[in-house]
Length: 47
Image (cartoon, rainbow, N blue to C red):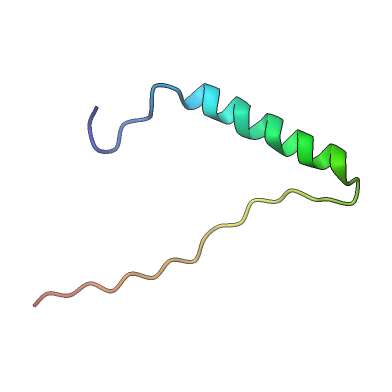
């Protein structure tokens, strides 16, 4: 597998995460799921 290829079990992992989210939502009806973009700063050094 190349460095940036999609994993072979991508669909299985997405199904697992979705089922976990649903399970937690059932525990507390006031729970909200949201997706946030991570703010990542990288510093490049030339020397």
